[in-house]
View 1 (tube, helix red, strand yellow):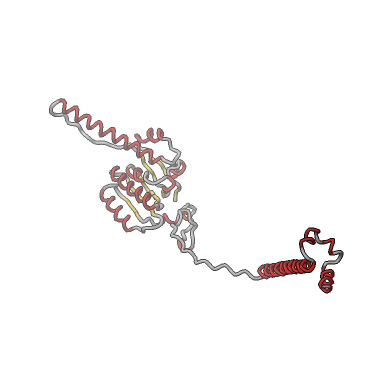
View 2: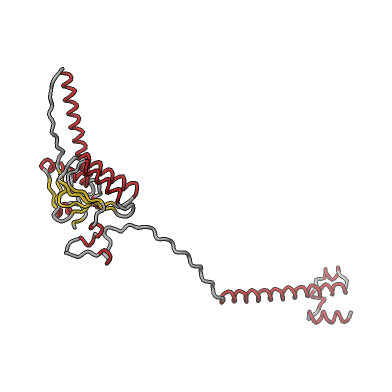
Length: 288
């Protein structure tokens, strides 16, 4: 018993009787009380030592991870490049070099070789050629359509223009118009199917816009009431042709600086527009 007290006194210096509350001293016998204090003190020392050791281990692991080299990120497979059509204003490279003759030609190398080339009167024969060349043209990339004509059937021109519009809307392809030498009458109607910023002219080309023409005779013969119906039918034909003509005028000047009243005033006298004037009015993007 004396040895136990001596050990306890070594661990807890001072007056042991004053460091233990009086209630606990009364409740516990002397020997059991000393053992309880020894066990509690041992647990306290063990927990504190374990805490210190755990903190030391955590700091060492954190330092090791910070100094360890990071693994390189895995290389991602290179995605295939999507097909992109060459822009109209693409810079000229050695593969398609064009001589710089002081014009804008070198800025638009795609216009050098139209995939669809049309010339002559606009009629069913031209429409057949247009369809054949369109079918043989590349399915992707920018499509260039050139035209040189003194005019022809305006309804065939509208038909070819509708083919261009549908192709553009359904495929999203860039389709360019190149007018050469003369784009007269129905040729201007076909040109109207292309947005103003997709139209080009060669140097010296003229555009001619005029009113629709009609050549017809009316023969009156028979009951009077039948003549009234015949005359009304002819009048309706003329009125509808005027409406179609006005639609064409609006399509031609869309996106340009030409007022509708201006084209209406000039069309009856055959409005000839030189390439430079067409560019300044915004009817075409540029001249080559």
